[in-house]
Figure 1 (cartoon, helix red, strand yellow):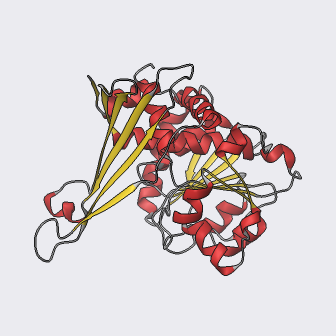
Figure 2 (cartoon, rainbow, N blue to C red):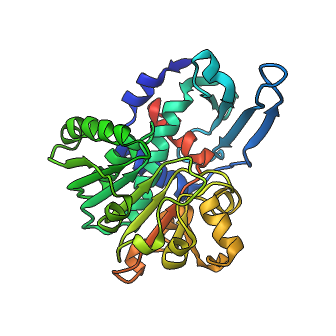
Length: 327
């Protein structure tokens, strides 16, 4: 059995190749049961926070062009780990032979998740963002932010990147890091700066990408320029959200999976509940876009605002793991 740590997973995955693999995976489909949530009460003893074990399985069907595979992502969330100077979240991905059940590889699940999440947004942007999009704003400065910025810059001819974060020092640090690394990654110049004014940065952007844990909207629909694309990656529970009702009201709304987003994503669940978003205005998910059942931006007026909400799908992990091992 092969073992790929975070560095090996990162080195094995090319952004554009992964976008193509995700596109093919959504086109083909796979078996993908609902993710399992198993609470672990008071993991560190009385008075400590509850922990969570998450299991996300997926498998491909026999008879396809490639050998069948089974994959399971195991994620643990231990909120009190900071007391021991440890990350709160750990993840591993187990890839199995779909014919025999034999283990094939164990991959770092945290890096796998970062890379496939960013590339799922890149796939959506390829369908939904304007082909001439040149200005990107990144809301959030966490571990996923540099991956999202890089992928969006590869998918569209981005020339200017603005970074906004709750902590200005973090935004400036990420902007400096990306100003140094992006030109070599892209093979072309790109200007990167920290944005002190969130509203102004959003209003000037062709693509707005958000990856935060916010429970209150950070992007107002009124700020979005005609033709903008809004990429919402964080806010992965019904109680969290990154955009307000007006964004859902103004936008053509797309999701990674209809079932997952309608059940788990606050940016979809809350406007559905308020009536700002009707179920029939969920235009398509990545399955339908990949299968050309909806033509994305090509089917919309030029000044349409598009909104893509991602909550993650086990199919994406399986596709990324297979690509990482060269399968």
